[in-house]
Amino acid sequence: MIHSLIAAVTPGPNFDQFNPLIIDNSPKAAQFATPGGIITEVLAYAFPIAGMILFVMILWAGFEMLAGATSSKSKEAGQQRITAAVIGFMLLFVSYWLTRLVGLVFGIQIFTY
Image (cartoon, rainbow, N blue to C red):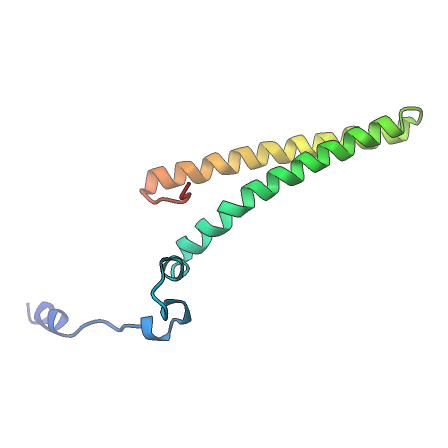
């Protein structure tokens, strides 16, 4: 009982004064103050960038296969590149839905869009 009274009277340490991101009290600074906020911001850009890389890889593989249609070695390299791009897309798809599922299970908002 005495411990609960002491805990109620003395506040815990406040380290916000040492956080350089909270100086201006903007919403973006408050978001970057937590690891979850940083992860949310990174994931908002990571998935679209990974999708663009996937698109470029598929285009590159297609051109490689067309340019080397007479050479079986070039065709195989293009096929391997497309296979790698499709596997990357599957990993991207699964990771996106796993992050959505983790957000739903733990009740946190990972994506803000």
